[in-house]
Length: 149
Image (cartoon, rainbow, N blue to C red; front, side, top):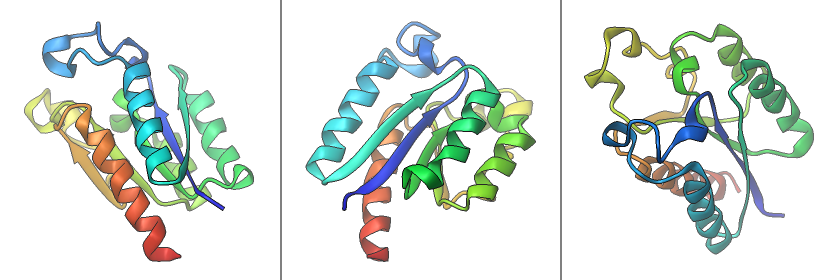
């Protein structure tokens, strides 16, 4: 059975491509998801994608992961990274390994963005490498899955 990976994107990431392109680039979320889906197929991984602007919907999706057989989560929680204890608790609660991804370098931005409530629970964080960070996260997830097999 293929390793199952969930790509989870939080608030405002549906605006990628048009929202502050100088900061986030011009690639849309749909383009990123398509690129990752293609890469996942090459690596014989099962990838599902979910984006919501609502904290509760993200938490509900995380809660469904064990029942869905999700083995690994790649998450860009957007601004919820810096504020959502509930999202942190959901990730800890399901005990599925995850990587935190940020398109922009949060440490080169406003001070309130420098703290991540997820980083110490994550296997790792990929920050400031643009949309390419998602690709790196998927490659790591593939290697992590094969190392566990």
